[in-house]
Image 1 (cartoon, one colour):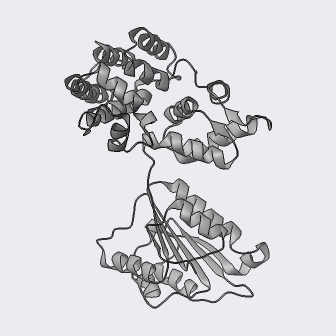
Image 2 (cartoon, one colour):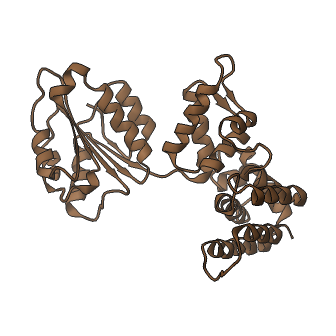
Image 3 (cartoon, one colour):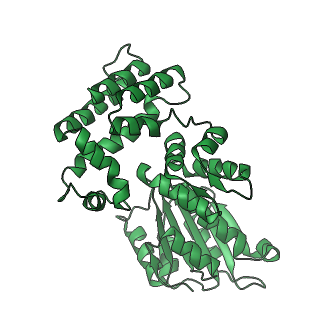
Length: 348
């Protein structure tokens, strides 16, 4: 049986599972379904042998069962197997948690592995039954995992790590291009990465901007990453070339795609002005919670090219443009014109 795993990380949970260190209960919850599915799928596929699954593995849905039925199933013993596995998908549809609270309170059956998959948010800890369930899970060595959405700035690192596990590499620009083009939907993101991996030759498993352009359809010269770079360096000509390209090729990029990217940059740039030693790359990186001083270079450049006052004005302008792009106080200005208006305001 695994030790207490309250607040365990995805990597730690997967490591224990691969070492066959199982817990009696897994409470998987949160807004990011990708990690919840990965953990529950691994348990479903690897705990029991194929011949054991017919009698000892149950997969059900929260809308189709009650918490009492789940608790009753969990109290059974396996047939000719070391474990029985019960996976409750869409557990957010369970109407009550009291029977499961009582199940963990009275020490779960050690031969049962109960997995509760609660998506689209976390359990409401303010409810007494939920609080007791989580407390009981902790007491019996269970796993409570909260699956959070990845932030935009975390996506390149996620992409790099995902590819490294599959013995492939990617440069920073390519990772940024993919992250900016696909966004934080990890199921879609990993699906696209898998397609790219299939296209790589065995002798060179390296993803470059050229590979991204060919396999995913993102221009290596005209994309959100290059637009951000042009704006950071206040390269007026390049920024306008990219915006013009976007205006002519809406599928390549639009205000809805690059506005979050730029907003995140200028929001961090505003924060960088408050760093205790804003002339030090390492200090700024630490203040912004970046991996190293190298990742602070764009913010050092930004502080040279944009004053704090201008940065604040840009953030305000972005909020205005965002509202207009959604039709607020904007009867007839198209997104292409709004895009040009924003870029002009930033660069002048």
